[in-house]
Every structure is written in C-alpha cells, then in structure tokens.
Image (tube, rainbow, N blue to C red):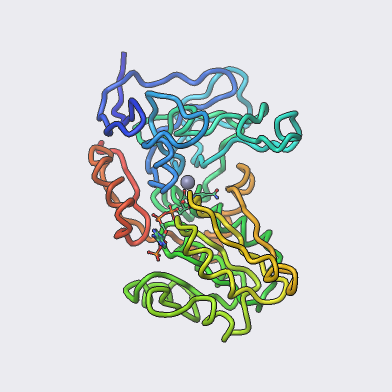
Length: 340
Ligand SMILES: NC(=O)c1ccc[n+]([C@@H]2O[C@H](COP(=O)([O-])OP(=O)(O)OC[C@H]3O[C@@H](n4cnc5c(N)ncnc54)[C@H](OP(=O)(O)O)[C@@H]3O)[C@@H](O)[C@H]2O)c1
Ligand SMILES: [Zn+2]
C-alpha cells in the first residue's frame, strides 16, 4: 500500500509525530488533494493543545491547504484530477439547521467537519476533503501564496468586506501577525485609510510597505488616544490573541465604530457601556466564511496584488515551523511544503 508522510498530534499537548501512513482514499462526495503547501495558523494551537470543542485524536492539523486534486470519490461532479484547489477552515454555521438556530454552530449538522480539527488536514503529503470545502485556486497564485489566504486571508477579507466601513473610512488593524499583515493589505486595497497597530517599532516599515498609511506602536503609545487623534476608527479589526490588547484599543472607535474581533483571545475584554451608547459603537466577532468566500478572497488577492509574506519550512520540520509561528517572530506566515 502506498504511504505518505504526515505530521500528527496524538493527544492534547502532545508533540508532532512525523509518521508514514497509508495514502487515504476519497469517500463519496470527497476528493483527494496532493498537498503543495499548508500555512500554519495560530488556530492550529486548538489542535495542538486540545482547546477546541470537538477536536479528536490522532489528528493531522492544517486548514490553510493548497494543492492539486489527485483522485475523486464516488458521485463527485464538477471536480477532477488536475484541478488546482485550496481548502480552508470550513465547517460550522450553515445557519439553517437546528443547532445553528440555537446559536450552537459548533455542532452544526450540515457542515460539522473542520479540516485539521475533526478530520485530517494539510500537515501531510495528501489529504481528503469534501467538495463543499473546496475553493478553485486561480492560476495567478502559487500554492504557497494561496495556502495562507485560506484562513488568515479569508478571515480578514470577509470580516472587512462585511464590516460596514466604506472607502475612505479609517480602519485600524490591531496585531500584525499572520492575519494582521493580510488585513492591512486588504484594508488598503479596499480603499480605507489604514492604520496598523502592533507592539514595538520593528514591524512599522513592513506594515507601511503592505499599505498602512499610519502606524501605532502599542508599547509606547496609547492606541485609543492615537486613533482619536485621527478622528476615531470606523472599524478596529482585532487580530491579536490578547483580550487586554483589545480593551486598550476600544476607546479609539469613532461614531458608529465597531471593534470587529477575529483574534481568538481567551481572556475577556472590558467594555464600558457608556462608550457603546453615546457613539452607537459596537463590539462584534467574525468567523472565516464559506468555500465561496475563500474563492472570492483568492480572486481579490490575485486581482489586487495581495500576497502573504511567508517563511517556508519543509513538512519534516513541522514542529520547528509551528514553534516559529507561536514565537511571534515569523514575518509573517509560516508555510509547510512537502519534502518530496
Ligand atoms: N475568527 C477566525 O475565523 C479566525 C481565523 C484564523 C485565526 N483566528 C485567530 O486569530 C488570532 C491570530 O492568528 P494569527 O494566525 O494571525 O496569529 P499570529 O501570526 O501568531 O499573530 C498573533 C498576533 O497576536 C498579537 N499578540 C500575541 N500576543 C500578544 C499579547 N500578549 N499582547 C498583544 N498582542 C499579542 C501579535 O501582535 P503584534 O503584532 O503586536 O506582535 C500578533 O499580531 C489567533 O487567536 C487565531 O486563533 C481566528
Ligand atoms: Zn486558521
């Protein structure tokens, strides 16, 4: 039986085990993808640490996958071997089933499966995905470019395009990591006056190159006060993993401003009710989106020149690559490619 290499986690907080396993066969309604690249998202910590509801082991992480279809399962139409595809965080929140009606989208009955969480993802040479999770990858993007757009990209793109901000509005991106560096590019390409906020000054030059017209160092400056000097933000897109960092920026919202949270911080944020009432301000969250939203993200990026800045590691160094992402030192996304 032909085998493939994969990096898997066999228990919560366990190490990455580099294993040889049989190449999986696609079941009905699914395809097998020969993985060409897989981004490492901070949300892979959910699998590594076992902090996401429903994660099961052993599990191959990875939900920023780009590659080529290599086999199709029974009943698949519209997809064939050789198609360039990408798979992102997909699953939950169909919006129609009984779980979603209760607001409990983690148990969504229509699309309860998330790659890298409830089925094996892209830290491998091959993966199997349901066709509902597939986005077509445009020719103008390489696999290494497309991978990170499938979670870091779609999440910031989709959040911004639904945020209510209009061209010319001031939009701040809080946290310039994997999500944030793409958020800055999308915000600038969408025509917003784009403010990057990060700790320290070492990311300032890169943030400006990516399209930020303003930069706030949250270590030495008060982000809320600095945003108010610019007239207040219509949207603060919070990509940080820290609740207190979100609290510190909240006061920088202008009239009708929204703190739009995509960063999965575990600590709470503090929200003064009067701040919300007086200026009709709000605090909201945003999950990534559907496969069609992913396709839109890829197409927008191809058209406008949005590209992830990546550090590429071979799959055999998955553990080192993951630690590099977790260290906050990566500029800005770490991407795995097969050793073959
Ligand atoms: N909503 C969704 O659908 C969705 C999708 C993907 C990821 N996420 C979540 O989004 C978050 C970011 O993911 P990522 O892949 O972009 O991670 P990342 O590349 O590791 O970036 C993390 C960011 O958090 C900031 N940060 C870390 N520790 C901090 C602290 N103590 N105080 C202030 N800021 C801190 C860093 O800010 P500096 O720039 O200042 O260093 C950096 O910008 C994660 O929580 C991830 O789980 C959510
Ligand atoms: Zn992700």
